[in-house]
Length: 415
Ligand code: HAM
Image (tube, rainbow, N blue to C red; front, side, top):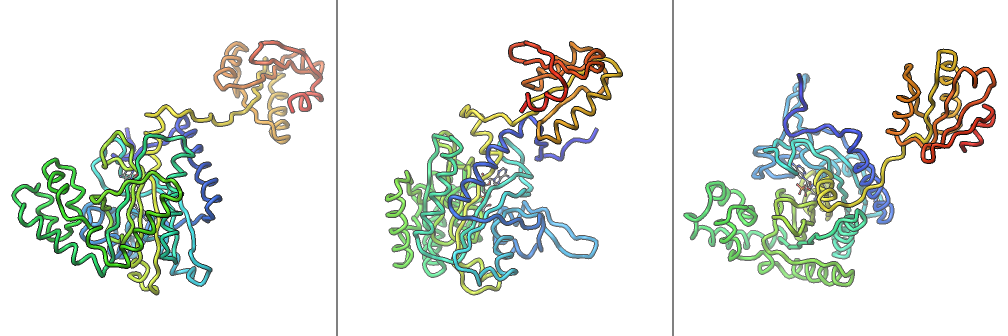
């Protein structure tokens, strides 16, 4: 027996109500904030991700699904959604439009991770990017949109964490300080962090090992090393967030798993659990488009994992509206009635009335049971006598009351 590959899952019909609920909230939210949908391919040139996500990141080092196609092209299943959107922005000349260009996506993401609850090898992200403006008012809008998204889903007990990691002017000085600090404590670091120290010291700040966390608590903070422009940007952003009444907390240890971030980084996390279970995260990436060959173009964005949202909706017991089901079930007794049932089902559907039916002959009792389990509001019953009289029996499934009506009247009655 084949099974779904490790770290992937089937989204069965009983789960779909969650997905449609979230889809609808996304569409409404993006309309409110003026974002338009973009869908990029599921795979890209491997170089796109090497260039942007960063060669020293876990994603590039260990998690990419990379392959050569039959034409010898080196391709990678997207391990994140930002770089493809920036590639599309440049490829289609979107920089010629009024800026910022605001785009959103719902896309499958592929990372070769160790599967566990909330961590999969294929997951889905809702993400959005605002490209072409560096004003902190845009950062505030992007963060506000993320926060409002979770509120609109009826999720509570979340925290909004914020940090600024500086720019290419001020970060080198900070990284030197950070390396100096950690160099005095290499014995206390886990083996992963010891390896990271040379290549990507920022990542030491979010190691989950207790001894590394303790060290991170006393480590130098990036916000103390910001250049005047980054400092001003961060202060204005905090002021806007306060104006919007957003309950943010500055977390000097917040760094993200992708290298393209500059200045603002933020995450939304469930209050109850550790930072590993972020529901969503994002930030600025002011150098990324230039890195891809474009003009210097400031930008920022956010993405949330849909499976993690669903886990939290379930944990918090948020009621989800059921998906609409056909309201009418057609039951028939005997071969003669069957022709009529087939015709009637099709006629009602053409009139816009959703219908389920018992396809092959079962007892009337079994058919009514099926109608019940499908949640049908009415069952139309056709027997030999009804065929002869050109009538049907209409049964109200909540009251179990039945009446006989002429067939030509049925559609109007149901409407
Ligand atoms: P990220 O933090 O790597 O950011 O992923 C965004 C969200 O996707 C995470 O907060 C989490 O909810 C979900 N997620 C990540 N990996 C997994 C996984 N293996 N299984 C289940 N869910 C997962 C980005 O990808 C950036 N592109 C976000 C961004 C957009 N930054 C700027 N614009």
